[in-house]
Length: 202
Image 1 (spheres, rainbow, N blue to C red):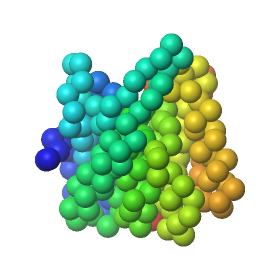
Image 2 (image 1 turned 180 degrees about the vertical axis):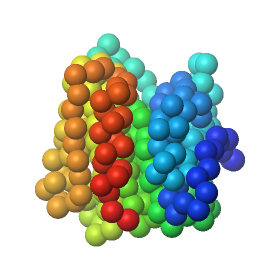
Image 3 (image 1 turned 180 degrees about the horizontal axis):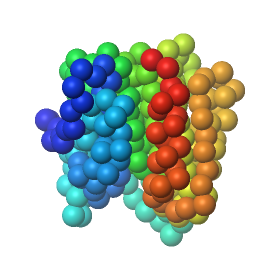
Image 4 (image 1 turned 30 degrees about the vertical axis):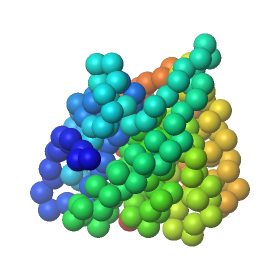
């Protein structure tokens, strides 16, 4: 299955940033982020393959009264493999993935499958994929940023906190940031995302 993408090119750049949207959105949802990240390199925003409401989904998810109730574990792994395969086709040697919500889980899944392919992964308001432990066991774990709103009622903030602790225990490069917001990306969190990217070595 081919992925539909939207791209912002940066001439003579050695970096390609991949954006993975959340549930029910599409490749245009993170366009404002792409414009703000284009100074770091070329940006590719990917569309998830599964139609969902007005947009698309990376994998099936069921909701309960307190947020996410269950997810399709095999679907997460399949989406991660698809994204990693697409990213491998890009010529830039420095590859970064940024995912929001569902896209965050897929970004982490792709990095767990191919840890030496990416220099950095930002998981915004996300949760661990079923292969998360692979990141703890690889010596080539990319730098990871975990951001989450303390008032998130869709994906509980404890997911990011627990992933951060596990990565720290495994001596991995991880930054964990919490914000007074819900299931969203704020101006403050995006500013810190840009700062983190600027300080992340190749």
